[in-house]
Every structure is written in structure tokens, then in C-alpha cells.
Length: 109
Image 1 (cartoon, rainbow, N blue to C red):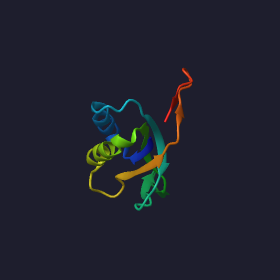
Image 2: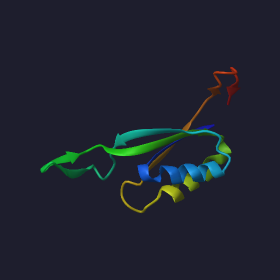
Image 3: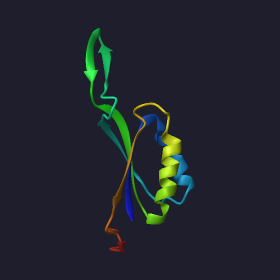
């Protein structure tokens, strides 16, 4: 199993989620996060004063999937979340040793 962490633009979340749900993805966790990559934030003006916004709002989608679905999930997220501009996001793939269902005490690996 793999843990896929996708950090994407907030305006792309519904589109990515819908595309993933069309496949056999059974569950995901979606969180609002803040951070920056290469774009390093931007300057904004509020009430006539300029200030720097260094941590930009992003959304993180996390899902644990079988190894054989990794390629399909990566393809779907990359195609759906891509705008071609800096700040489109990142995808991380991490190994998962095992998972446990709290309700049934069932072990997954």
C-alpha cells in the first residue's frame, strides 16, 4: 500500500476529487493547508498598506491505495490539477506498512 499526498490549488479540489471518485478510489482525506514552494508567496495590499503573504493557502488530499493503483492516481491528479503555472502543487508517494480498521479491528496490508 502507498500513502499519496497531493498538495494542490484550492480551486482544483472539486475537479480532482470528482475525477478520483470516477475510479475505484474508496476514501480520501482533504485538509486545508498553508505553505509555499518556488513562488515564495506574494505581496498584497490591505487597507492601503502593503504586506507580504509568505504562506499561501493550498489543499492537501491524502489517500492510501494499493500499489497497483499508484500510476493511475498520479496520472489523474497531474492531469486534473495542472494549470501550467508555478504553484500547481506537489505529489508525494510514501510506503504504508499496514493499516487497521478501528471499528472491526481488521488489519490491512
